[in-house]
Length: 172
Image: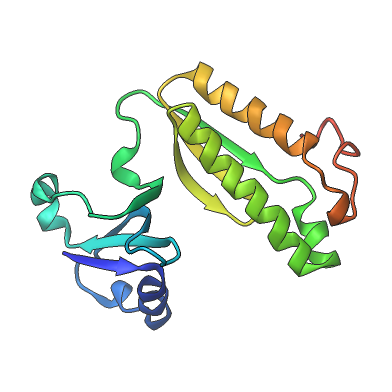
């Protein structure tokens, strides 16, 4: 088993080495942590061969000063309610100004994680302009989606140069 930072994982994926292995490794997110005082938060991953799966339960959690986002082992177990959401207008913002798009994306992704934690959910996947979250109940999933939508509609987007209320009801 190997513990990797986001930078190490990116380099490994650039080399395309995992796909060349006879048995590709399982790679999952342990979360985002502050490891030492004064360091910025970093994403940590774990890579291992599938034959080691039974041993994963015996590995102690990562020691860190602060956990910013939980990892895959914090995901709900059992029946799940999944929600997929999209940041409407993200492509238009990217075409207009990539730096402003980064600001909008950070607000969106931070809100997705914050509200998922608040409603006892787990961010299964986050991509530019989209997110998928898992919840143990449909009620929590709906509350997350509605809270996220309400926050994004009422967020002060004037610095981004567009009107968040000018969306099409069919697109939302």
